Image (tube, rainbow, N blue to C red):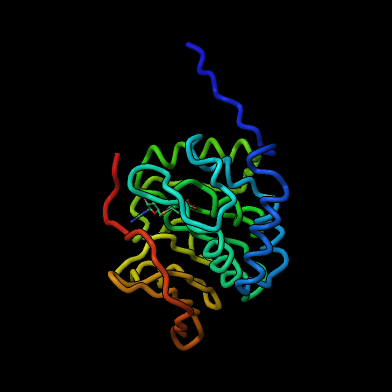
Length: 224
Ligand code: SAH
C-alpha cells in the first residue's frame, strides 16, 4: 500500500501572508523580545505547518492553539521568551526539550543550537512532529517517546533544558542532567505557575523567577 502524504504549503500564501507574520513579529518586539536571531527565526519558521488544517488560519495570532489530545501549541510570545532566556548564556551545543507537542518550539530551537533532543509522552503527537520537522529539513533533532520528567540521561549532560509543560516541582533528574554552566528554563506550579531560569554553578543552582505563565501540566508516565 502506498501512503500518500499531503503536501503542506510551506509559504502559506494567502491566509498567512508575509504582512500577517510581520505584524506578529512587531508584537513580540513590543512585548520586549529583543534577541534579533530569535525574532528572525520566528519570522521565517512557518507556524501553520505545525497545526491541523482547521487551526492553520490562526497560526500567526499571538495565542496558544489546540493541537489535540488536550494539548496546545504555545503562544509565540512565550516561545520567543523561553528561547531568548535559553540562549542568553551563550551558544548551545546540546539542548533537551520536554514536551515536543506540535514540534514548533523544537523547530525554532533546531535552527539556533547544534543538537536538539526532545521528549514527548503522547505518541501520535510525536509522530506528527517528526513528519513536520523532516518536511522542514531539520535533521539535527532527536525525538524520544517517554516521560520527560526523567530527562534523557544517555544523551546528557545538556547545556540547555527547556520544558514546555509545567511540573509542580522541578524534577531532580533535570537538575542532574544539566551541565556546569547549563540553564534550565521551566514553568513551575499548579494553579499559579511561574517561569523559572535555573543555572547550574560550581556551588549549586541559581534560581530566577521571570514571570507568571500558564502551561499544560507535566504529566507522569507515557501514553501509547
Ligand atoms: N512545545 C510544544 C508545546 C506542547 S504542550 C509545541 O510547541 O507545540 C506541552 C507538551 O508536553 C504536550 O504535548 C504534552 O503531551 C507534553 N508533556 C506533558 N507531560 C510530559 C512528560 N512528562 N513527558 C513528556 N512530554 C510531556
